[in-house]
Image 1 (cartoon, protein in one colour):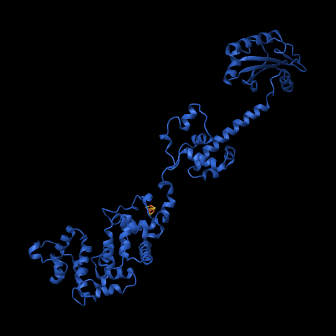
Image 2 (cartoon, protein in one colour):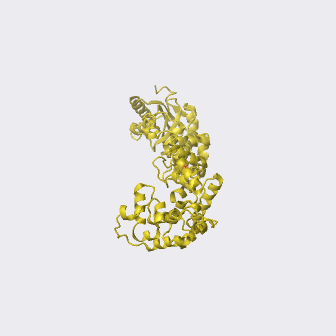
Image 3 (cartoon, rainbow, N blue to C red):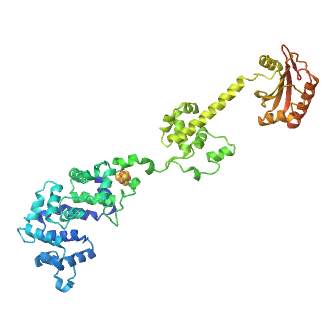
Length: 487
Ligand code: SF4
């Protein structure tokens, strides 16, 4: 409360005078005319803090059936002149029976008609109530012109220790966690509101009306030219003097906090991860992960979220081992993004596993002997001729094999187009051909020689060197390279 009061007084120092006025106000010492005027103003919904409001109030109490309830002394004490000169009696105001009845009740309550009587029965009756609920019950019966919020306005107007349970003030208290929500909140909220404001008043030693004014100014329930409401419908939490105590802010920190970094779509094209990937640039782990995450949150970009993930799981390997629930529990990730990350990492794992499996099913070196030893067992039971293409990378390491043909081998069946299509697709630097002779004799036939020459010439044109052609027999092999038949 101290911080709210300090904020409002800094914004508008003139409120200090208002506070003094509130503190010296004592409804038990108010004259009869004052209660009646406040009753008329509250019942008619007139705000007489402005000149126009005061005019409207004067007009109301000096005309029609209300005039009968005010003595000339009461009007004079309230600074209101008789209607005759200043206010033409239009005589057209419809009588307000409930207001007339309420004013009559006030007159009857008074056992001392002196304007300044401090033993006014009405004020004494109000003072006898230990809480506002009882006071409200009494007013409802005695003053039927007042209903709903008008009851509270009247009480606050006459200086009774009451705060107005306006929705803005209640919203502020709710955000601070002082009012609770729940199924029976509406029924309980007013009582809880009064209890809360009473507690604040007790702890801060300030009158209820003062608490009501400052909470109202802070929450926007009281309009002021000089004080901007901080905790209005759209709270300005960055300016808030009591943000440390706010429950609402804790739950909405994400949406109220400033962004840590600028959104990715405001970055330069050469900095955005997706554009970098498409241009073939090398990306960091966080950038690769950000491409999978796709979108950030209000506060963080996808790259920030990726960094958070890598900070938590330390390495991509540990990230790949994380469960979907662990990933989804990270702020800003959720189920959809965690599924994308897991799917991408699983694809990567499968691709890597396949590469490893393939490596185990290939000859370890490109020497003719090692190729013969590798394929001898495999061709052992083959009854047909198989023509296999081995593809090598620029480091002369065998990276892949593919079967080109099966059956009787001659130069018209194995076409260079089929052979080199695969090699080009693999971006191979060189190739080795392997085929078997089911007879067990590896001696090359005339067709084998013609085919080898054709393929070597085709490779030369395409820039893919034919390193060897190995014919695998039962116990022996024939290498075109070892025998000097290939350059
Ligand atoms: S931190 Fe924000 S929501 Fe909480 S009281 Fe202040 S302005 Fe209101």
